Image 1 (cartoon, rainbow, N blue to C red):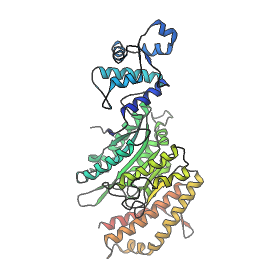
Image 2: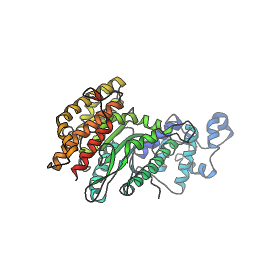
Image 3: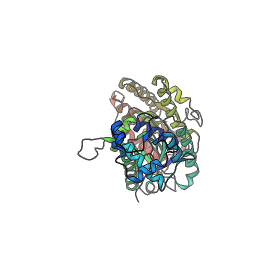
Image 4: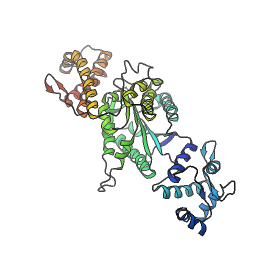
Length: 435
């Protein structure tokens, strides 16, 4: 069975019609003439050409919405005919009506316009949302829905659920993600839509998304950044020299990383989404049931909106940190909320260097103990102690990788750091914690 994204919540359909009408008609007050006559051809040859492409059934469906019998169709009449309690009506004459609008809008706009599809969406990827975590997942989803509903751009919250496949194994997780993501991105390209936001939630070690087994051990089932980079760099169709997904990634405005340690790698995420406000946690993220979990995305959304309302990115981070819920559940203390706004390469490098210097100072304090553990094993250390050591080592690894991604060279004792070795150390500490 093919994996496909599903609509979780989204823009008011009235607002969606406003957007589609304005895109195609260029003027929200412009009306659609309904009589295909020689007089129309002489007065408005473009409108005559467009209407001539409709089938008799489609033209009849449009005329049914002409409530004032003026011989033309206004945006308000379309809404009155097609919307009931804010929802698009479907079936029979309503499907024929929307098909007619789609033909007219697509021809006028020069790209596919589907009045039943959003112009923009926030993609919500929640992995390992097993039955025991369902209540928490719903709380997180509801929190995100409420945030997305407040976005003036009125995007739709779209979910890609690969839980069954993700929890089977790495190959299954990878295939499910690739199939679902391909379907989602292809639909955006087809309809001229955009991925205005991205949210990633679930267990993670900062690189891999993790499946939690019944015995509470973890399997690394998906390298999420590598998979997204694959799509960003994908030539489609092959051999065409076209990279349509890259444009979608470049236009993404906000990214919320609700998975542990992913926020410690923000400069690596910056490579994927160069123009987005990024938010995540440097350390362990809040539980999905906590109000602080969706608040991570909320911080990115607030910072971006400040900029869109005329503010400067240099002050946007402060605004994001003041967003609702951004001070709950230790989000800005022990969890280490991190925000990154688009900046110049020099500013990005400066921030990455400062993060690395801070992480290196912390790691230096535990380096001798880590070396002993790597040589002799866990010993008498408790899971809590190993958790703390792992957290510091992972932050160091992420900071080093992020500095390199920003164009710098992470150094220690006068020599470049072996990034593969830093990952090996943090992975081993993670493993020993559950031994």
